[in-house]
Length: 406
Ligand SMILES: Cc1cc2nc3c(=O)[nH]c(=O)nc-3n(C[C@H](O)[C@H](O)[C@H](O)COP(=O)(O)OP(=O)(O)OC[C@H]3O[C@@H](n4cnc5c(N)ncnc54)[C@H](O)[C@@H]3O)c2cc1C
Image 1: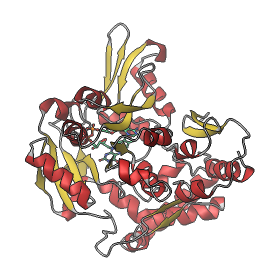
Image 2 (image 1 turned 90 degrees about the vertical axis):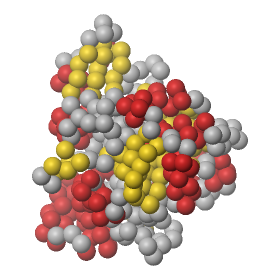
Image 3 (image 1 turned 60 degrees about the vertical axis):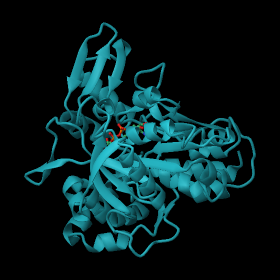
Image 4 (image 1 turned 45 degrees about the horizontal axis):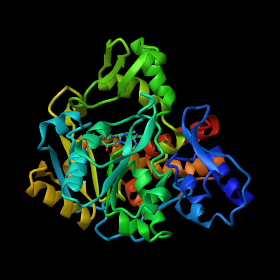
């Protein structure tokens, strides 16, 4: 690997700016680096060989640890919610998909719709590994059953872009489902490889509060009293809304924890640093993005178990055509939601977008390096924040950036 490129990757990783998406593995020559869990429990590029291979222009342009950029900012861009074509709440019409999905199963229902109407040959997304109940891996789904196997959020590191080049080399059309940072990177990579726009007609995402280290999962298992070696399967969510974290042992014993305790008290305390300065928790680069359409109680999301309901945002005309077609063929059911009501369901994401500019500046000050975020409405969002909260959040990030590594 050219020293320029390995220096760039190392500086992104060492400054805690890597999202773990895996695009670098796909760009460098095969075998030059591999995404692997590091000591902190996050997926990071591990340089394998000293192969020399030209310069780092592509990685520098697409790595989300270096930049996130809309390219062109449309005039109707919403400073908090980004590009919006339509806003709805809804759920999969098929009850099994609704039950298995994280919220209302809309992402899985759209994936099944795309496959069953031959609009794509496969869906590339994250599922649990066949060999290890705790490992996430890329799955190519070609059937409804495949899609259902991958339904539900997996709150642990995933690197769905690490085999992008091999996927494109197949020459088949596919839909891609990933975290917001994966989709932002894929859109950017389309500038370097024309096959992305040709072969990936649909990019779907979900709102994301951040990726916890696999150590968060280990802590959860400890709290449940289940040894890792005893595990047969482990689900973070699904089977209801929000659904329980569920560990099943090889002896078929079942151990469960509710969402509020698993996410709120354990997993979200293990987030990687880059997620704390993320400008795009809401999947602004996707065609369609889904989230939990939480019902409110006393101004906070209410996590009482109910039938699943998703917030569904169409962000591009292509995404909106898909939603309309899926509604027409009764793959999903949905109703329109006023834009202002999104904030009632996703208050955390509102706060995050308002604070991120301060957090970014704090990172620059503390580490001398931070990603470039362009055309994401960050200044406009900041101006709507309470100045004291904004400063407090920036100072908190400064201290964290000085103290934390990853
Ligand atoms: C790390 C993480 C953080 C999240 N934070 C929020 C949040 O702050 N607010 C919110 O409303 N929603 C959040 N979600 C999303 C939410 O849990 C639901 O996924 C979303 O509401 C869509 O539900 P669904 O029923 O339509 O999806 P489903 O039909 O269950 O489909 C989920 C899809 O997500 C993919 N997926 C699951 N885990 C991962 C992963 N680790 N990496 C990449 N792809 C994955 C699966 O392959 C599947 O296709 C988060 C999800 C994850 C994985």
